[in-house]
Image (cartoon, rainbow, N blue to C red; front, side, top):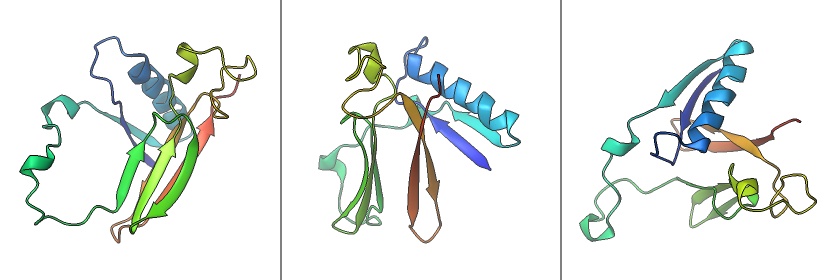
Length: 127
């Protein structure tokens, strides 16, 4: 298995990036390959004013900040919402266990295929 980790935080001491590195160690311990993408800062932000509509249609959208794990299809786009890794850092959790809005602390593994299919599996962290 090959895993690419992408942290949405660019901060040097980011908790999200630290969690990704820890997840990467688990992947490699189990015989997989892990790479942490560190080029996000070089990618320009999306600006709808610059979108001329002549590119390929989107097939996957990723989100984490609704704090609820779900995968839905709307307008032929697959939306994978994977909770937020850092949700328990600003809330004690619904049951005092670090979960937030029914999503336990964890991470998502996203699989993408060349034909546009995608699959997201949310893996809760074990205590």
